[in-house]
Image (cartoon, rainbow, N blue to C red; front, top):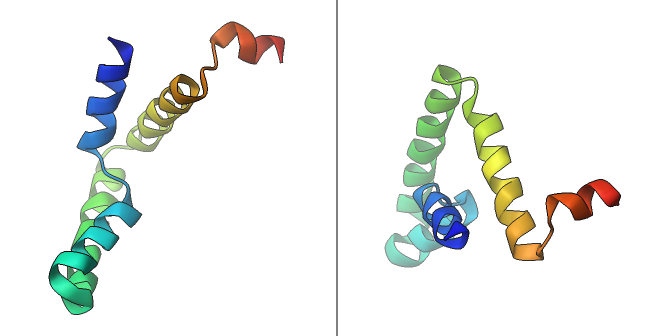
Length: 79
């Protein structure tokens, strides 16, 4: 059940490179620049309005990485 939860959260906030490549392939470079600027502007506004957003995103990314790598909390503490 954890994999589904992490997967859904990751898909809700796509990575910037994925968005840029996808837009470039579908609409060409000129539209990509405009869309990327709008995308970045939106994220900047969200980050300015919610100071905890970057910390939450980093925590979710760490959980996803731990899941993918098979790291358990006990493993990380033991080193």
